[in-house]
Amino acid sequence: MDTIVYPGYICLVLRLKNRWHNLCGETFYNPYNFPIYKLEDLFLFLGLTMKEVANELRKINNAAPVITSADIVERKYYYCGTEWDDVKRTLRE
Image 1: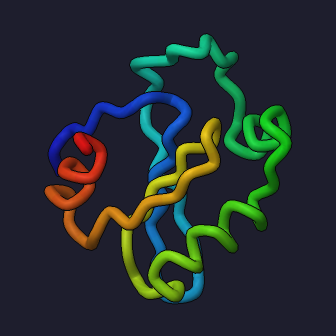
Image 2 (image 1 turned 135 degrees about the horizontal axis):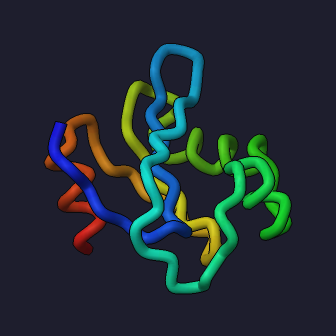
């Protein structure tokens, strides 16, 4: 797998079968200077819940196997595709 660099306020999420998998990596860029929290704590800090984010991501592709991204600061959700090249292309947009 290639390296993908993205801001700390973007969450990459993989949907497989009936489960969501967070694709967290190492923090490299943190423009809002967020403390490094577990994802659940970061959502709480921003007034979100895992269920709210999952529901928004489910709307994107009807919960089919796919990689999606969530901008948790702006509360925007994006379809990225099924391959890493698709993710890179989406993050560049």
